[in-house]
Length: 155
Image (cartoon, rainbow, N blue to C red; front, top):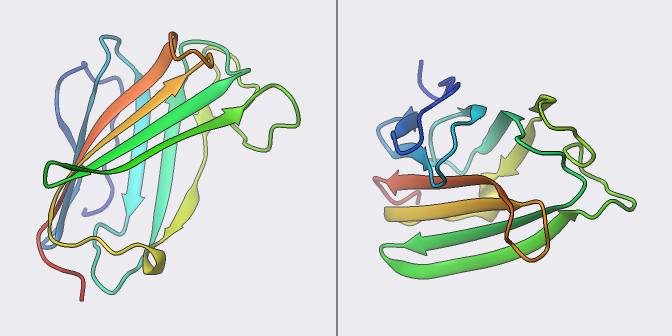
């Protein structure tokens, strides 16, 4: 079943496939030393025809989420392509469902990513997604290394 892979309680450092198709491969490892309760669904597993992807992560955080800063870094064929930092939860008027969740409470969400806005040329993408429970980036609560291999240009 392409595009659907449940990943629960994985040992850090072990690479797990999210999906594999004729035009796309996605896998990830945890980049911190702690095991995670984590599940990730992505459908469809394709970049052709610029589809809408449905992303459905489920996660049990290791600490309360009153503050959440995310850092998203992307490298394309070894060159830095994107570096984005954003405070998603500050404890005041937070708009995301993950905000205010307690340690051990399941965070389950789903959202669409519109492929028509994103063009991924053929190549290798290395993506690091980090989550911190403080603004100084000292208390990491999640870290994922994603590998995306685009096997053909989506044109």
